Length: 206
Image (cartoon, rainbow, N blue to C red):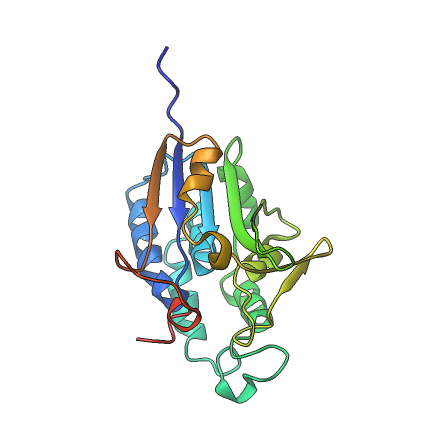
């Protein structure tokens, strides 16, 4: 008997470079290309994936464009503050007010499917595949994007401190296979051979 096909979509992070991934996903939306059974997003890749699953065309691009020039989100002046160079609390609030995720649409479009947001357990450094819901969705997005100095550093969910998922599983293709996928599409804004480091991953270095 032929094994049933199970397709996963994996989205790498990459700071503001994730607008590339968002562009690919917007092209998917235009062409109604949504054959996926498993969705896994990391860091900023999790956010653009979320807008794709919610069927919100160009929403991630619009949000990135708006906050990239907003000093309340990005400022070296508050780099040493509690919030860090990037204020994720401001980003969440801004997104909810100006580009809110259609959480009901996400719930409906992922029914009988799997959706994961990768975060790193700050205590042991292991990857955790969070399963977001209506109540904690924005919290999960903060968890996968939290970095020391650049952001608040960590995000607590159910008593566990999490930080950026890229540090434990930046391209979770193996995790997708472990979840049962036998076809995996990976979208990444970084070139082949790219090596992760804190500054370049955030899109702050050339």
